[in-house]
Every structure is written in C-alpha cells, then in structure tokens.
Length: 314
Length: 226
Image 1 (cartoon, each protein chain N blue to C red):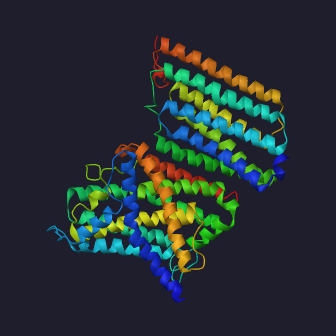
Image 2: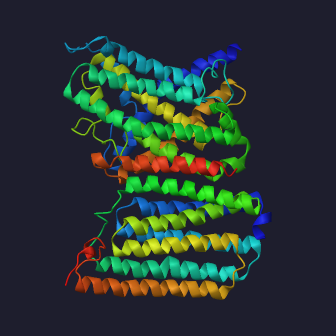
Image 3: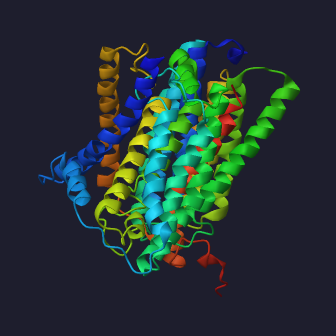
C-alpha cells in the first residue's frame, strides 16, 4: 500500500521534472534538422531557474484572476498524472477518482484558466490570443471527446489503465481499424494542443501567436509557472498518446525499483519516437493561413468519426 | 462464400488495406492540388492491387494474381502517367474556386461514410451473411462511391472530375475483389481497358476545351458563347 502511494507521488514527480527535458529535446532536434547547433536540451531548466529568481511585474489593470490563473493551470497539470498510467500500468490508490472524461476536463480547465488570464489584464494581444485559442478549443474539444468515447467503446471501459490492458492483451484489438483511426485522430489533436505547426507558428513572439499571446503580460515566477504548466501539458498528452494509445508495452507491472527505472527509460524511448515524428511534421509543414486552420482539425474529426463507425463492426 | 471463413489475421489484413484506400480517397477530397489527387489515386490503386493479391493468396484464386498485376500496371502506373501528362499540359495547378472548401468536404465525407455504414449494416441484417469483413467491405465500397460522387459534384476542374469518376470505379472494383472474388477474368480486363479509353477520351476532350474555350473549369463553361 505504502509502495503504491510512493509510486503515485513518483508519477507526478516524473511529469513535473521530465517535462522541460521533452520540450528541450524537441527544440534541440528541430535546430539540428536545420543544421544549426541549437540550445542545450537542459536549457529550459535554466530558463525556469532564471525566471523564478526574477521580480514579478504586475500590470495595473490586473485583478485576482491574474494571480489565480497560473496556480489553477499548474495544479490541474499536477492532478492529471494521478489519473493516467505514467510509470506503471496498475491502478494506483486514487487513480480511479476520475475517468478519462474527468481527466480531459481537468486538462481543459488549465487552458480555460490561462484564457481568462489573457482577457483579464485588458491587453490587446491577450484578448486576441484568448479569442483564437477559444476558437481552436471549440474545434478541438469535440475531437478529444470523440477520441475518448471511441477508445472507451473499444475497451468497454472509461479508465485509461483498463484501455492499456485491453490493448496489451488483445493484438486483434490493437491492429483493428478503430485503433488505427484513433491513433491518427489523437496525433492531429496532439499537434494542435501542444502548439505545433501547421496551426501554431514555430517562432513564438509574432503577430500570429496564439498561446504566447495569452501570457504576454506575465513575468517572473508567474511566467515560469505558466511555462512549466504548458510543458507539463505537453508531457501529459504525450504520455496518454504513448501509454494508452500507441505503445501500451514496456511498463512496470509489479512496482519494483528496477522496474520503475526501466519504465522511465522506456517512456523516454517512446517519447523519442513521437518527438521525432513531431519534428518531421514541423520541418516539412509550412504554417497554414489563419483561416485554414480548420483543415487539420477537420481531418482529426474525420478520423475520430471513422473510428467510432468502425468500432461498431467489432 | 470465401469471406464466410477467413481467419482473424486475414480479416485484419483485408480491412487494413481497404481502410487505407478509403483514407487515400479522403486525401484526394482534402487536398487543393491536382498533382496530389493523381498521386493519391496511384497509391490507392497499388493498395487495391495488393488487396487482390492477398485475396488470391488466401482464397486460392489463381487468376486474381493476373488481375493484381494488371491493376498495378494500368491503374497504378499507366493511368496516373496519362493523368500527370494532362495536368502538366494545363496551366492550372490547383482547385481554386471549389464549391466546398476541403475542411467542409472532409466533414461531409465523414457523414457519407456513416450513411454508407448504416446501409451496409442494414443489408447485412437482411441477407444474414454474418462477418465484419463483409460489412466493412460493403461500407468502404459504398463510401468510396459516394466520395467519388461528392468529388464530381463539388470540384469543377476537368481533371478532378475524371479522378472522381476513377475513385468511384476503384470503389466498385475494391468491393468486387473482396465480396465476389470469383468474377470472370475477361470482365475485369474489359473494365481495365474501358478505363484506359475513358482517360484517353478525357485527355482529348481537355485539349479541345483548352484550344476552343481556353479553360477546363466547368464553372466557366456555364457561360453561353455564341
């Protein structure tokens, strides 16, 4: 029992501590593809350290929402790792306090808080960023819901651990058309939700920015918390994509120290594969015009609908 | 019937091949560029050839190997080559004034697939041939036909309309490969040569249109010229 509680804390710590490494690796890899050196993969830790030691400057027009939003976003990202299989594929003590839809809601709550923060200070860019991300959220949310419904139709359960076991035990389910479509739909969702091309721009501070615009008014420790929260969101989405959808294998079963270390290693390897495919997409894709951003989302929606249609065949 | 007793591995191979060819039909629906349509069509034909070969291997139909080779050769190489020739001759690289934007046509395509699934499921209930591969093949056949119709309806470049026709035909061919694999070989060969003639005729028609009307877009051919 104590062992399980320690594991649950470790899951949260793994997400907290490894999230900057993932983002750092993607940034480094993108630069390497373009034949430049790029920052070190540990640069983001140094950035966070630096930001935590800076003095915060608060706009005069800011209300309590300005201070509450980063905390809410960060806390939401700390709750989700409790609910999903990060290091082990056994259910841990309180991992059944919410199902997949509940986890999706907590994940979206973080984005919602940042959206409010963007509107709060009255800055023009914040307003633009919030309106754009609200528009993207309206288009992306149905896909997320459909993907979650599709995977629960496939596994006949709403808990991510059960889904993982179903995919692990039945190769016929793993190779079924429904699962292929769900993976494709989730991948397009992953591109949208983690600020990647073809919708988001690759350079961040510019007129078409979406997520950067919402946090433009922040500085110092609050900015560090927001950045960390967005990196953790990326890490969580990658974890769900790898451990629940794409690679349900190679996770610790019994909870020994060696097994957990092995599953951290395998998690990093899985992320390497996904991150490299993301880098490929970012390198070969050009950014879409702002009014064409419904196209990748329409493709994601199509995959999700096809998944649900073909899940009726099984 | 051959499909009544396939193993689960064979069923998953068939369904994956069929589903990827359906996805390529969606690639054609979601793209702006004429060149992409031709590439997607070629890839789709190769997948259908692979499907024929798989049916031949697992079902023991010797003549289907010939059909697979002919499909790969004609639909996968000759027709795309001819179509690329036509695309190169045109001074149009992409669909600009399509009636529906790609995003909305993708969503309508998804609805059409759902419609096809409902029909296929209903047919399965009525005839009582159980088996998911049958329903899947029927669904994909019907939905590729509907997607071909959709492409014919919403695109106005002549090349896209040929491709819509070819997708429609590919759908029927795919369905026939899975559902009734024992079709006489003569009919299949006749269909292949018919396709060749269709594309050749369209090529001549497009040349004629270019010389006499100056455009191949059906939208601009609506105007009366006298």
